[in-house]
Structure formats: structure tokens, C-alpha cells
Length: 181
Image (cartoon, rainbow, N blue to C red):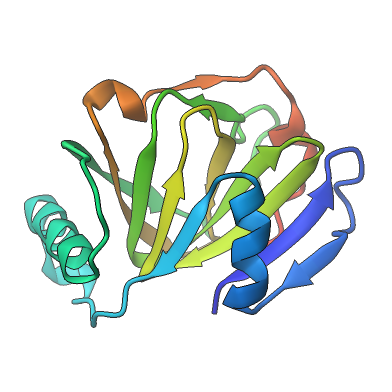
């Protein structure tokens, strides 16, 4: 189940709302020009596929689900959440970044938290295997792997530069105590 928590960016301790139904989540994301879909195919266990197979599978899944894409470049992003007992040293957390181009993010395995800073809101989306996110150029975001879990994401863009991200300089990622959704 996909979950979205919405925060005011000046009050990151308590969400303004928490949504669990796709029909409630998609309009909120649409305000930020973010697309959320679920890929309705059974996905193989990640441990059974190579990075090349994951890239091939993502192309097949997008085509089978009639996702129009002109994304020429793709990369495999593997995230490992820290063990539950690990303490994160100060200053080693995520930083908010801005995307250079439009991109699609297909979650092939595991779970991760995607934080999107839009206007004066922080949209915190718990993404799972089968979720497909469309993030437009200029989206301020960061991704946090879930504690003790792994996540495999295929990110695709029109060209390699579309997937480049630069830090925003905002400290919101340091201020937000990521809650696992």
C-alpha cells in the first residue's frame, strides 16, 4: 500500500494529513506535477536478476503498461537501508536535490521513502515494488532507504544529463526526521 504524508515545511514534526488511498494521493502529487502509477505485473525476485536484466524488465513493464516514454537513458539505483541498530553520524544524511530533467522511477524491489519539497509543503511518499513515479525537471527531492531493507529502482530520462541532480542548499533533509511509511 502506498502512503503519502503531507507536511508544512516549517512544521516537520507532525503531518497535516496522511493519505492511504491512491485516489486521494494522486491529486496531491499532481499539484507538484508528479505522476504515480502502479505497474500491474508480477515482478521476479530481485535477487534472481542482474542489473542488465532489471533494465530490460523495466522497459518491458513500461511497454506492457502502456506508459508512453521517450526516455533513452536508464540507470539502476540500488539502495540499502542501514541496520535498525545503526546510529547515523551527524552530517551524513541525505541532502535535498533538484533534478535536471524529467525522469521516470520504477521501483522493482523493496521499499524507499521519496521526499518531495514543493512550495511550502513536504510530500513524503512511501514507495514500494511496482510503483512508478514521474518526476519533472526541477523537482526538489531526496530518497531514503527504509531501515534494514534494500530497494531497486530503475531511473530513466531522455538523456544521461536528465538524471543529474544538484543540491538545493536547503537544509530541509537534515531537519526532517524521516518516518518510515
